[in-house]
Picture 1 (cartoon, rainbow, N blue to C red):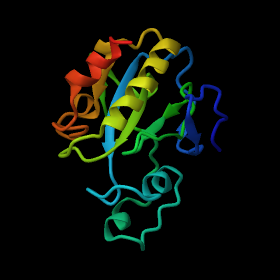
Picture 2: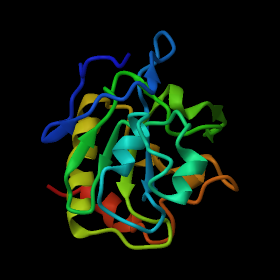
Picture 3: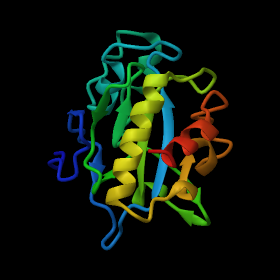
Length: 183
């Protein structure tokens, strides 16, 4: 059963995922991980990302779903192409987004990170609306968790090299990080 949203993001739709649990005792998030996802791959819109994170993805809808419908994964939030934000896991809980991972010689990034998915492909570009919403929620997260500073924001590809490639070359890190420094 999913936990209540004790740390909700403002201006988000809330769809509690069962794919989360308590962080290790005494652990406060100090890392933000940026991901991207599209279901089916390279296709946008529809309920499929939420269905995956809520364990209700129908494998008969698309051949790709047959491979992934039994995964138990989540993220704290998703930023859709139009900038809408969906939150699946309370920020104080551990979402299951990073898998086998390491940052700054520290394993198991799920334990101490917040994971944000962007609806998109690791080979494509992201929308202005996504950068705007991502900046807004990142600032909100940084305000709640002061240990998350720009040098502690990374991509899934950086914490799981060789295994993951997102958010990929289409994600404009310079634009995103610069936007965190402007008001």
